[in-house]
Structures are given as C-alpha cells and as structure tokens.
Length: 324
Image (tube, rainbow, N blue to C red; front, side, top):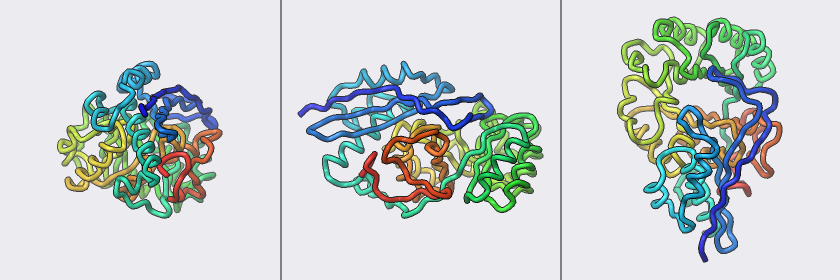
C-alpha cells in the first residue's frame, strides 16, 4: 500500500514569555508531519528557524513537495539539513518502528537511559526577574541561563545568588563581543558555570581559538550537520546537537559519533516545541554530557501522551506519542 504524507501548522501557547537576545515569543509554532501506511502512523515535528531563512510556508512547501513513497535515503538526496527534513525523517523512523512492532531505539541500536536530567531555561530579562525565576527553579538539577545583552555580568551574579547550589549552563545566543569575552568567561568560571553556549556570532567565532577557555565553550549556530564539524576543533569544546539543524535523527546520530571521535563533548538541545520534537532527540541522551530538552515545560500544555518530566528528570520509558 502506498504511503500518504501530510503536513500541518500547529500552535502551542507558551507559559508567559520566552526571551532570548534575538527576540521574544509567546507561542511555539511547529510544523507536524504524519505518514500513513497500511494502518500504521508515523509522526514528526519541526520548528522553522528564521535565522536560517526558514518559514512556516517554505518548510511546509518542502514537505508537501516530497513524493508519497519517500524513504530515508531518498529524503537525504532531496532535502538539505534543516527543519523540513527533520520532521519527515523522524516520522519515517516512527513509521518503521510501528510497522516492525519495535522501538526506534531498537532500530537505531541506541540505549535509552532510564532517567535523563534536563536543563530548564531561564529567559533573558532584568537581573531581578531572572533571579526570581531562578529561585523558583532552584530545586531543579540544571538551569540554562539565557544571556547575550548588556548587563550579563549582573544577570549571572543575580542568578547564582538566587540558586547557589544548582548546576548552571549559559547560552549567549551570539550576543557577546570579542573584546568582552575573556572577562565574561572569567565571571562564568567564578559563578561555577559548566558550559557557555555560542558566545560569539557564528561568522566571527575565530577569536575562540586565540583565548583560554576557563569554561568549556559550546557551538550552536556554528554547527549544523556533518559538514564543517572538523573546523570547530580548537574553537569549541562541545557542540549543541539539535535535530532541526541536522535535518533529522539519522544525521544527528552520525554527527554525535563524529563529534566523539573529534573529542567534542555533546549537548542535546531543542527549540521551543512539544514532546513530539523531544522524543527523537532523547535518543541521543546516552552520548550527551548535557541534555536540554525542556521544550514541553515552557508550554502551557504539551501534546497528550508526551514526555514525563518531573523535578528536571525525563523518564526514559516508551511513549505512545513517538518511537514506541
């Protein structure tokens, strides 16, 4: 029986606001994919990324332009790394698992930890506002602090004072200047930050090879898929692996393996989206030093049968939503 592919745009209100250096949003807007074949359904989800000239319309058009009998190999020949390929790739994995009466983890020969600690994100705001948010979340194991604007030293100091015993990672979202980098990294080290994500613009990150790294530095916007991974060595200590950048689980698994071979640590990250995006990314957790899959926690309401996340820990069991 032939396979039917469909795509839909869905909106999920965010609980409050989500602020980073590049802007603010009040809802997560995703493109979901559904594959139907022989009574089985495979699902996937992606978030178009405006920074890479992706829109809801362009991603939906890419997906709807695919042939109905698409395979993973053909998909990688037809679409580049990006959001559209991610949603379809993950839906194909899900469909294959359901047709085979097994799990995607088994198909991919991946071990799934029983429990996975995830970061919880504190949005960019005033030092007082961020300190209040950090104090409310101080019982969680790991906080990810959004920075990237004037006053970051004060923000970080306020957060650390409000959550003195919580592990911290920082995401500057390309917002720091090379002239301030050494001072800000020293402040991060003083505040016991474990990782600093993308401090400089991807187009100007060569300065990272010329300075000390008192805190490990992680590439986000500077890394997408397999191509160009070797060029990060010497500039970065880790990479943030996001399926919307790699264009799906298939390439993400290959990127993780290559990063390990190059001596780069791994963070598994996400866009603000539902558990349908988190579940495929969760399969990379066993290879990751840091996991940042808190997307559903930022929403007013997740999809039914989504991830179980309690006190910053993701249960690693099976899910009826994706992957078996």
